[in-house]
Structure formats: C-alpha cells, structure tokens
Length: 514
Image 1 (cartoon, helix red, strand yellow):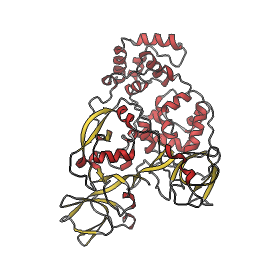
Image 2 (cartoon, one colour):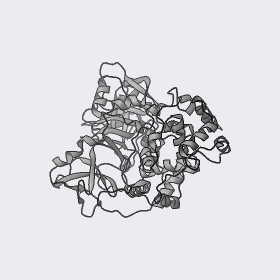
Image 3 (cartoon, helix red, strand yellow):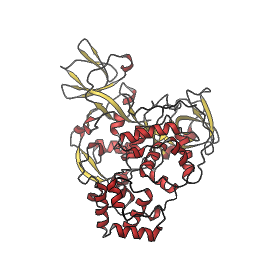
Image 4 (tube, rainbow, N blue to C red):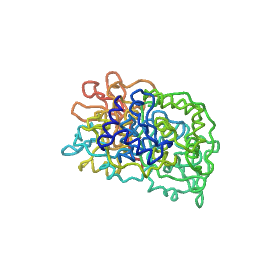
C-alpha cells in the first residue's frame, strides 16, 4: 500500500495518471514490450503479487523524467546497499569495491574544526571537530581528486597476506600506476600494487624484470613469485597508498564456502559481449562457484528480509546464457553485489536504453528519502572546514570515500557506529606500534576496557585517558594494579583507574602508506 501511494504521488506531481502512463508506455515501447506499464499496476502492488521490473522502472523514468534512482527509492531499493553487501558477503579472493555514489543529491553531514591553540597528538573526534551543516553529496564529490580504486583483500590473496590481513580495505592511486617501472630487481620489500588479471584482482609487490614484464611476489606460491606481462597478462590499476584495516576480528556474515584450487594468473581477461559475457567474466574474477554464490545470496535475502534477493544456483547458471537483464530488481542488486559489477554497467551490458532515462531529481518527500539529514551519524562526511587538522587530513588524503559511509559498522564491528567512536591519532610522534605509523583515525570499542591476557591479543591497541586529560594510544597490559602502556620508545606505567584508565580497544585503523 505504501508503494502504491508513492507511485500515485509521483505521477500526480507530473500531472499524470497511471492510465495515461500505461497508454504512453504502449505508444513509446509497444504493448508487448517488457517496458509496458500495465494499467492495473496499483492493484498488483497492493496485492503484493508483483513489483515493477527493471524495464518498467526505466519506462517510468523516461515518461516522468525522474531519475531511475528516485524511482528505485520509491519502491524500497537503495543502490547504496550494493557496496555494503559486498563487505557483508565477500568472496575468498580480493575484490574491487563498487565506489559509485549512486545518489549525488543525498544529504550528508559535514564537520568543522573547533578552534583551539594546537591539535593534540591523540583526541576524540568530537574534541577536534563539531557538526557543521548538511550538504549534497555532489558538493563533496566535486572536491574529491578521484582517480582511486578501492578493494577488499581476500583470504586467498597470497601476495597481500604478508602485509594486509584478509578484510582490509586498500586504496590504489591510479596516478601512480606506472611506479612499478621504477622498481629494481630483487627488491622484495617494495610498495604494493593493485593488479587485475584473469583470475581477478590481487595486491602484490612488483619487480620489473625487463620491458613490460614484472614479477609478482606471492609468499604462498610454490615458486614464491610469478612473472606476467603488463598489458597482456595483467593490468596495473594503481599503487596502494592507504588502508582501512579491521584489527579486532572479522566483520562479515559467515556461510559455507568450498575450498577451490589456487591458480596462477594467466592472460588478461577478455569479457564477452553482452550481459552473459560480463557475468561469466565477473564470476570468474570473484571466484564464486554457482553454489557458493547462491549461498551468499541466501544470506543477503535474510539480512534484507526479502526472499526476492535469493538467487538459486541453477538460475545463476541460466543468467550466464542470456543477454537480457533479469526482470526482478532484487536479483540485479544481488548479482551486482556478489560479482562486483557497478549497477549502471550491468544495465548497459543488458542493452537497456539508459540514454532515455530521466535525469531530474524527484521531490524528496515523495520518494521517502531523508529530507532533514537526521539519518544517523553513520552518514557523516568527515572534516570539511579549513583548519590545521582538516588541511592536514584533506591535503594528505585528497578524497573522502563517501561510498563507505553506510558500511562503517561492518568495517569497525561497532553496532551502531557513531562519530563518538572515532579518535584522532594523526599527531602521535614515533608510535611504537606499526599500525599507528601515518595513521589518521582509529575506531574504538568503548565497551572493551580491560586488556586480555591471551597471547594472541598481546598486540591489541587501546586508547588510554590520563587524569591530566592527555590521550595515549598503544598496547596495554595490567601488572599488579598498574597499567602499562607501550606508546613510544619506552613503556609508561600508571596506577590503573587512578592515574589513567582505558577508554576502549581499537577495532579499525585508517592510515596512509609510504
């Protein structure tokens, strides 16, 4: 009933009726076309017997001139969910993340720097920044430098395992993709690069062996490394220059996965024409089997409480033999999330006439979007106003990855995520822990306030508050009532709960790489 009311209001805003839209869709696309909008769509929506197909949504967009994203939002589908689902049910292999911000008109909060004499070495986010105003996402995107790729390191990426644990989100700078040409032979401690090859993507060190041939370092490979030719066997997307690393356990929904064989990169992937070729190549690169992908789609359907997001293994196989897009939008969202396919690219590969889609934003109150900006602090954009800390942060990072703003709870393991969980550590001098080197922010679980004595947790990071108001970040241990903090060249000892106390345990670190 709610979708019926939205549909009626959106059509009324254009002085249209469903009967008129049905006649126009028949005149423009043909009554037997999948783009035809039936005159009894209200009744079908009210009965719950069907939902508009992707073809009908495109027809509605064309006739009303409203954007496809607005029509999808009216029918309860948010394209920003795709990147979140990628992190929720990731494949074993390293996967390129969909960094598209599908709604540039969305409202996000910005923050400005508080006035103070000097920024401390470590401090809560709220100590340095305060909420400023809401802006459209496009305003932030206009200030981003762009030219970055983002990927999630997979369990089977042997090239990255020496430096980045599975689940780490890495950023690759496309402008530095040619930096591998400066690497010298036998340099096993050089920078990492994000590389695309037939089996997908990998994060690996590279050594130039002559011409366009490079050696990828794979510590778990029988030979330790493999040689490929850039441009033929592989493509370098960029040099890895930053990471967002979960440091307190995995943040994904578990499900059964069959252990597949680990193959060496072969020739660079050549996608077949049409949607079937895109699906085949994308599934091969992400490493899913049909059975594994079906199991992951079942998790997605459960999380979203909608069985239409589930795709059976036999249906997944059938899709790779068809050139037409699935009618159900939920199936398309699942395929985009599992196979790392941007939504617009999926529709274009399906041969849909995207040039005929509307481009005008619909009234926000009619599509159910957030109009007052009070959507929770998961949607904050970060420091925007000029200031010392802001200039240092934006000058160094050059981009705010807005597409991750809805996934911070999955990355940090904090439910729900809030800006109160963020701590600035960009001023820590000579940090003892390697993860704090060139770090900007850490996420802190304030419920974990006691260091564990397990040997596997000895390197866990904690934020500590001294009685004089100074914050420290480092490894902690309790010894006979004393709190020992290793945050510099020498360990510092305090009386626990008297001279200092633990604020919480670090669950994620955002830092630049040399």
